[in-house]
Structure formats: C-alpha cells, structure tokens
Amino acid sequence: MGIQKFWIIPILVISWVLAEGILFAGTWDARVDQTLHSSTFSDRDKQQVRTVFTHAEQENLPADHFLLRLEEGVAKQVLVHTLSSALTKEIEAFTQARAIVRSTLNQHEADILLADSTSWSRIATLYQQGVSEQDLGSLITLFNQQKSEEKWSNFRYGGGLLIALRQWGIDDSNSLQVVEAIAKSLIPGNDYRLVINLFHSGFSKRISPEIIIQRIIETAPRTRSITMLQQFIQ
Amino acid sequence: MYNTKISLNRHLISLSLVLLVILSPLRAQTSTFVGILGTLDVPSNQINLGARGNIEYRTQVDTLGSLKISSYGEVLYNTEQQSFTDMLTAGIESIWYLHDDELLASLGSQFSLLGNEDSDPYWVPDWNISYHMFRGYRSYNPFISYSGYATKSQIYNGIQLGFSYSPRVELTYTLAAEGGFDSSFDSNQQDTIASLEFAISGLVGYYMNWEIGADVTWRESSDVTQEGLNISLAGNTTLAFSRWLQVQIAQNFRGTYVSHTRIWEMAAELIVRVDTAISNHIYLYASPTITFSNLLDSATPTMIFTLGVDVGF
Image 1 (cartoon, helix red, strand yellow):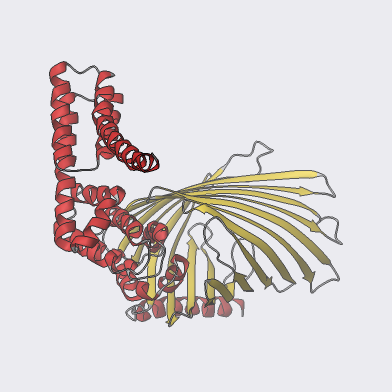
Image 2 (image 1 turned 180 degrees about the horizontal axis):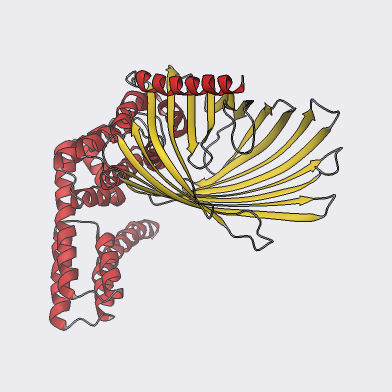
C-alpha cells in the first residue's frame, strides 16, 4: 500500500508538467484569437494573421514580442495588410538576427544570448534599422568579451547609442568605433546614452565630431565613468 | 596718457587674438575657435561689431586626473559711440579621481582691459576647491566646495554643502546650501550670505537636455541698503537635432527685495539661440535676447539680436 502511494507522486508531477505544457501552448493561440476577436478584421484577414503567427511558431521565435505587436496594431486599427507585412518583416529580422548570433558566437554563448528575448529583439531592431551584418557581428563579439555580468544589457545600450549616433549624423564607421571604445571602458551601460552629450557640448565649443570621436577612441578604454570621460576629452 | 593706455590695451587684445590663431594648429590636445559677430540693440538701434576667440588645452594624467587651461576673449566696437569694450577670462582647472570620487581645484579670473559701459577696466580673480562623492544611481552623492572671488574693493569666501541624486539616467536632482562672508576693503562692512540652491536636470531621448534651477539668497549686511533677499529662477533647454543644427532656449528670472526700502525689483530674460554648422569647422549662430529689466513697471523690453560666425580648429 505504501509503495503504491509512493508512485502516485511522480505520476502527478508528470501529469502537471504535461498539462502546463498543453495550457501554455494553448495560451499563444488563445491570445492571438482573443486579440483578433476584438479586431474588425474579416475572417480571411484573421486567417492571414494566424498564418504569420504559425510561421513565427515554426521558426521558434519569441511569441510575446509578436503578440505585443499584434495587440498594438489592432488597438491602433492598422490595416491588416500593413500589420501582416510589418509582422513578416519582424519575423525575417528575428530570423536573421538569430543567424548572425549563431555565426558569431559558439553554440553555448549563442543559446545564452538568444534566451534573452530583449537582447534578441535589440539585434533584430538594429538589423531592421540598417546596421550591417558585419557591424552587428563586431558588436556582439566585442560585448561578449566584456567581463561584466551585465554584458548583454550593456550590449542593448550600446546598440541604442549606435543608432542615436547615426541618426545624429555620425557615419557608420565612426559611430561603430565610438561604441567599440565605450564597450572597452568600465562605464556602466545605462550611462552610454550620455556619450552623445559629449558631441552636443563639443558643438557648443566648436569642436568637430571627428575630433571628439578621436578623443573618445583614445581615452574611453581607460575611463571608469561618464563624468571622467567628459573631463578627459573636453 | 589715457589715450596711450587705451592704445596699449588695444594692442594687447590684438596680440592675444593673433596668438590664438597662431597657436590653433597645436590641436593635439587643444580646442580653439575664433569668430566675428555683430549685435543690434532695439529700441536704441545701437550696433556693435566684434571678434571673439577661445583656446583650451587639456592633458590627462593616466586615469588619475586631468589638467585644463582655458581662456576666452570678446571685443566689441560700438559704431555709434565709437568705443571699444572687452571681456576676457582665463583659468586653470585640475581634477583628480579618488576611486569614483572627484577632487576639483580651479583658479580663474575675469577681466577687462578697456572696461565696458557699466565699469572701468577690472580684474576679478576667482578660486574653487570641491570634493564630489559618486555612489551611483538611486544614491545620495554628497559634495562640499569652498569658493571665492575678489574685486578691487571686496573679497568673498563661501562654503557650499549639498548632494545630487539621480533616480535614473534621465533625471538628476541637486540641492545645496551655501554660507559665506563678503568683506569690503574700503570700509569695515562685512556681509553674511546664506543661500539655498535647487536644480533638476534631465534628458528626453538622446537629443534633448533640460535644466530648471532656483536660488534663494539672503544677505545680512551692516549697510542696511545692501541687506535683502535675492531669488532667481532659470530654465534651459537644448535641442541637438543633428550634427548640423542645435537650438537653445533659456529663461531667467531674478527678484530682488531690499529690506530697507521694502521694494521688490524683478527682471526677466528670454534667450533663443540657433547654431548651425555649415561645415566641420565653420559655425553660424543667431540669437535674439529679450530682456524685461523691471517687470513691475511698464518699461519697454529691450532686445539684442546677435549674428556671428565662428571657425573651429
């Protein structure tokens, strides 16, 4: 009798795990259906969106990111064609981002990075914003060399700085060199955005961005804080 | 005798500007710019034409600290009064890092060789030594500083204690209290000054910085006509749209209450400045400044339009 009771516990645990898996899998579809239900899309349009999600599921992409995009699109009453097209482009970017990560890092490191959907999403965003595969590979390699436990969080801030510098008017090569120099410093990631202030105050002092860049490249790897970098170069 | 002195001073200024241009190629650790500018005062319609220049040299002592030497000069010629005015500053600043903390010592001076419409030639040296502790975000970062300045008739010495606090990178609060003594050389007058400063600064996205500051100062004086309260409020926003365009909007308000007369005087100023880089080295700027010298009467505000070109090296 006692032995029979002993076997009941693992059976219950396995049943619970399987049930959770089924429920979790159902949640993905259920959330898509629930969101589509609140939309004004026709049945044909809804099927089109479901096809996109089936594709994302087959590709093992992070579901939550695309669900949020769907909910956002439905709330803003975006046309189904535009929404499907945007989702498809994002799926392509995520797939491409994964390929870049896998070709840059070893299997173990790539798995760790891709398990963090925020970092994966940032790589996809950088790719969509025109950062070349080569530059993305360089950035991933560089931040992977950081000894900090926050290296992938720092990578996300570094990616944000790269885009901001390019939008402000710094060319691709120089902006990448700035982020590379900052990545070699001990400056915490959430201070990276303050780097662009060096260019703003340089503008006021009539120091050209190219001179600021040169000084950052020379100085940043030896600095511990953004205030130190600021004092050293201006 | 006076004319000889003015002529000598003009030569000194000219020599300084020439030196600025000659020294500018030594740019490895030097930042330099020179420029010309013109201003139009409304409603007096007076025109000033002038030149300005800046030179800064900095050097780094490994990761321990840095040293910066800087000077700025501006000379204006009033076409109606046919007279020159000038304003020059020079300073040396040294910063040392003790782990994450910062020890700063500076020595500077502001002076005028020709004087300006409000004063004769003057020299005002100033000094500062401060220690700022940095403990990171969501921590109080205390600082202490001793500073002072002197004119030909007075000397001020003050100590400031305060802290800064940043809950996140986009927002920083600063609160500081200062106490100081202002002593006159000409008389036995000794004033005690107490002030409280508060500032909030922040970022919006990557391209907008803003700052709001308030300062309340009480002067206790043996001369009752000097005793009173000063309140100033200032706001400043910088929009750096791109490497080619930057816009700055600043507002200042100053209220002065003299205990003896029990009268308030209030003044305000609005400055809008647009800077544009037309190449990597040439910058154009335009700036209207509107000043309400006394808000409590109906005096017409004055405006100064400034237009200038700078060349950076």
